[in-house]
Image (cartoon, rainbow, N blue to C red):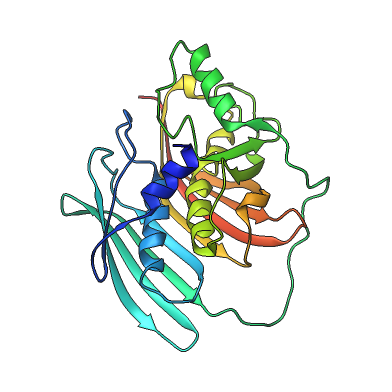
Length: 284
């Protein structure tokens, strides 16, 4: 089974009741569940209680580290079903405790005024250092073997960052990333599923801009974690065609940092945006 097929398997939640779902986590030796995994599953849970309307935004708080060895139960609250908008609240729980709280808003497709920021200059052709290659080579330089089967090191989406992310290089790197994203395999022609996979991928590198704003590396020892994550879907998109993800750290203060990103299609259209606040503690 390919990595993208594994992700699609984990996004295919089990329905326990009308508004109650259960999701599994991939095997992992890490102490917590990847935030993007819970984010994508939470979006799927909300989507399965809405007919026809696509999601246009989500706002999520990561409350506790998820345990990879336990399933996650998603409770959906049908806050509102209006004429144009639908609102859902999703709480993800393990052992009865909330690990994620998320609001998702849906809207009918409508016509209106059109404007967008210009795409970044340069050719809109996928390029850059593969995420998987950079992570694996960095661990090998430190004398560690990448864990077999861990989706963090063998991800279901291909991410290529121009110039690399430099997570393992102290004093190098930039608080801005320009990455190309596409699935590692075929995706069904389901717009809702493309949104869920993009939500998963959006948590993989955005917080890295916060780390590289200080030009530190994993060799120095630090704790980082997503605190909250927001996302907006502006236009329909086909993730299989590759999206350009421009990312930047806006500010860090105390132990928190804030980053934002924009997704462009190959024709330069803005299709989605996201923001994230992350925790960053340096040293033991």
